[in-house]
Amino acid sequence: MLEAEFSGIHPFGPERFLCVLLYVEQRRRFLPVWVSPIDGTRLAGRFEGWHPRRPHAVDALADIVRREGAEKVSILSVHEGVYIASVQLGSGESIDLRPSDAFALAVEERLDIEVSEDVVAAAGVWCSSADALTYLDLDIPELDGAGAEAEAPSDDDGSFAELMRHLGVEEEDLSGADDAGGTDVTDGEE
Image (tube, rainbow, N blue to C red; front, side):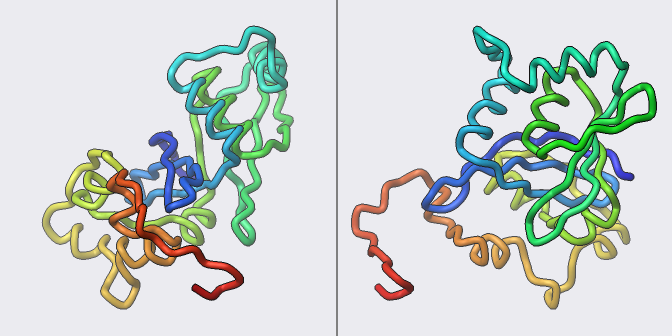
């Protein structure tokens, strides 16, 4: 298992779908986890210190986890974009969770997040320091020396910009400007 850092919730594409980004420093990869608008908004609020007036299910779970002495949440696997997460309790038992609930629990209880190496290999995205700063407003250390060449994907592996285009995100989408002259697409035709 690899340690991951919560790197925020980012809206992507013209639809502004919400994506939780985890950064796995050991592999210099971002792990994008798409969440629903409701879960993403709640998680962003919790990350900023918001608490609901009445407890949500994750708050009740946090009480149980606090009593059981949990230390971490884990992203165990991914299949066709669906992530499997869990929280490990002090008793050795684990509870299966949706990733958004696992992240909320990690934020609320200050739990470590770990990710399976297989998940990082399957779904992790390499991003240069310059692209992370430009597109995500995240400052990650620049690789230097021979490690930079070994870690950076070759041109055959594609680039971050190509990945973003594959996800339906163009640079103009990230600028925040409205596209008043855009085209509507229906059934795959313009």
